[in-house]
Image (cartoon, rainbow, N blue to C red; front, side, top):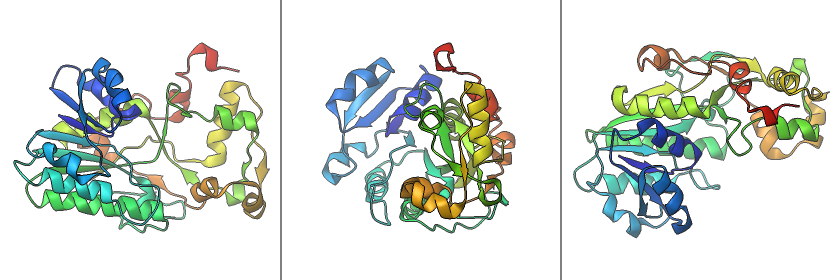
Length: 291
């Protein structure tokens, strides 16, 4: 098995896999090699931004987990396109799983969203993910069993910036209730388990929502976290005031409202989430994280 983009979620997936497979991890950083070896993966030098370094991937793995993000700019993902091209050159993998984003749906006005909803990317970031999905579907037409996990916000206490704590300590405001948006979350451990379940049990060319079951508004999420941490709840502001107070990246997340249906995850992949709600996930904090 080959993991492409073996960061936080990839390392968690490696722990789930254990010794079930011979594990390889593509990396462009020699400094990460000891960490990858400690996780049970053989480091494999390669750079998704350099096509020539990917030639050795052809015919190498029967299963591929693709977690590498697109570039930070543009409306396409040349990294995923290069990976798909390399994997198609010789004996193709039997299965490939890609972690995309729920942002591909755009703003859904707070509606419950299933995997059959057409994509409506409204930002360059979402367009890059749609492009990546399309590149991998081309592999599906060549006989590879491609599974796409569309994930929302990823959290975990042992993940860098993986909880709302720092934002709460800064007193960053959230939208008032009448302007607020629905958000979705997945614990990093559950996302890793969803990746492995899709590798083994995912249907061909199938999309799954790797999401918890909350359907909270963003302000409710931060209020919940503040109460659990023993910190003040964040101030509430109007959307107009938020435009002047918050950075564009954060405003972008406040511009889309949707609630993800995860029935396929539960029924088709038979995955029982350890943290179906963010309350359960945040309550799993180590003692030194509490207020």
